[in-house]
Image (cartoon, rainbow, N blue to C red; front, side, top):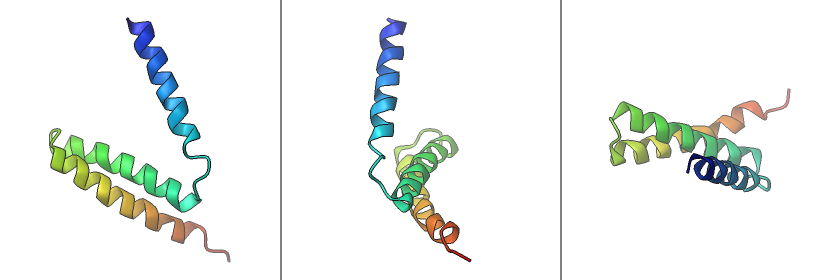
Length: 74
């Protein structure tokens, strides 16, 4: 059974990574920010659904804004 779970996890990870291939840099940053924010929100609130969704929303907004700082040319 553990082999099935491992194979399924690897397959889902590969599908998720290829789904980001056509995204802009700003969209990728927003997606990563939402993921990290969701995990942080869940950890900080003890697994609360509201904490997870709130963390994902805040992380997505921050991730979306980060691209504007790093892409400016000098």
